[in-house]
Image (cartoon, rainbow, N blue to C red):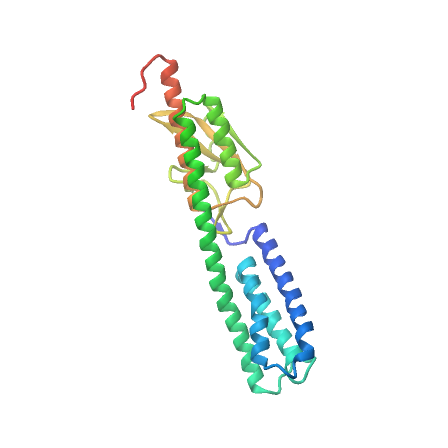
Length: 262
């Protein structure tokens, strides 16, 4: 297996958006504060410029935070230090202020980024747990197998933002095809980092639907180029496939006239 570290298209787009917004906000701050620069302490100006840099880090990640910090430091130097409208500095205290501005901005943005990720992980975990329980409720209602299959497909499409998800009944997974293992590990696939997980293989990935000693086929997930999957999402997807297998196993037993065992 190979691991590629390229960020996903969605991450890059978010980073560029955050950098653009931070740039506009810093220019706006400069436009407002330049007429007052003779009356303001440069440390106050630096603290105000830090704010859009922090926002860039929270929205766009570390790359956006670094770029915005450079823009902020350059803007502070250009408009608020002598000589004005130049990137030269004659006052050593202004140089220290600019360096502290960049350092504080990076640290604050990193803290904000971690807080956003923690919040996103909490919300995602709650959503995935609710998804699993919704299917569990369907399973205990004597839902028809066709309806259960449709519900599983819909949940997986929504969770991963897939192009399509098909259930290939009584078919073997193609040899060499990428697949999700029992615990959600990606197998037979080159691993590409994306956001907080791995990008699903562009050619598609299979999840075996098997349980109670029976094999019923596989779910085939067709992702987009930007489809990523965290470890938690992949684990839930594998658990959903097992849940479907149990429903199909009970349905098979009922159709054969045997009494299902608990």
